[in-house]
Length: 47
Image (cartoon, helix red, strand yellow):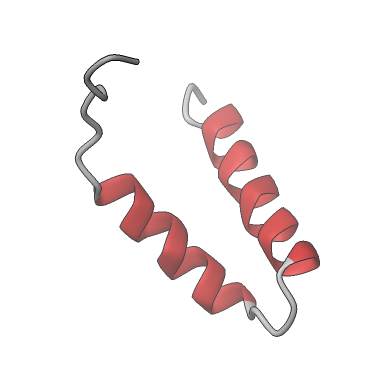
């Protein structure tokens, strides 16, 4: 199961978000993670 460690990492991120952001529900944290994953990441000039 090659995907298992990645799934565990995603679950840990969701739990961390729910534990640290007041009022954030797990469903919202999962949605935020999916949206962040969909973002295009580009290098910043001068960084």
